[in-house]
Length: 352
Image (cartoon, rainbow, N blue to C red; front, side):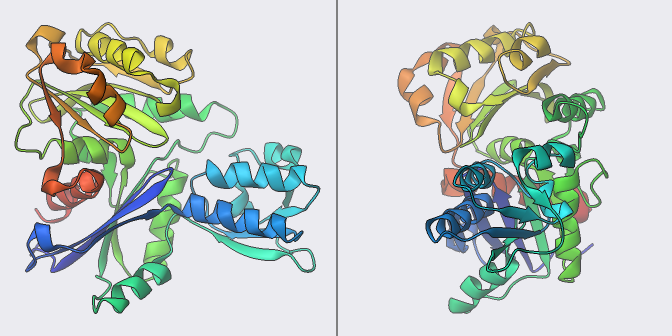
């Protein structure tokens, strides 16, 4: 397949959506890029605005990431206002619609009179196309998107379901691009929602998990050397991985807010030694851990650190005992690490 003329890469996080327009005839340093609030932040602000106006809310659209939007829904209900959500939009709040109703949300297709209609979804292509047009740039025909998909789990912890999926990828070889999908598995309902949206716009697409996208992007830093420990400290989650021979061989994922630099470094060392257990991370409120192969911390050559919350651990100096510490900035900008991981995954999967 010939190289695409242009690809829009969108890395959707809990706080930001990081956007890169990659064009064949434009050097990366000159490429258009944006770091903007994520759609869940935008939806949350729209709900807050409705609450300040004393208006009910009608959520309609597709399943998307929660976090800020879910917290805004709870505050809206606490204020004595109504929230009605279509079934697909309601799945943003919980995979079990009975639990959504137990929150006080009405699941249905009809809004209350005077309610503010708010569209849910991890992407707003009309907004992105409008911004690009302002700068005489065209929306490309191909889009790669990263979202953190916990998986559809109405009767189980979605933390368990998510990490079962990640562990299976590691057991199957652990190639980072194995977390990217042209057609996502049905249980990855957040990816599937984005896929349907992009297909409806007539666009080619690739979907990938945010954590592995960041790991793949960080590995493109020229100072990266294996065996490597790669850490991505995102706004919502932190993922750590051992990478050898271009594969992810050990992995853990936790909530960034629960990690001090000391705790993170302890988890990282135990991961490199192959002794970090899934139960240890899960029972601490994280997602989990899985080890297929670990080199031992003495064998780690580079500690590659990325993500918007990396500064505290870098300032602490606690990672220096694990190898050369690399504040990864592939392409010269740490915030497009995940976008470059998406571009690399596209090359590996779509342009062979």
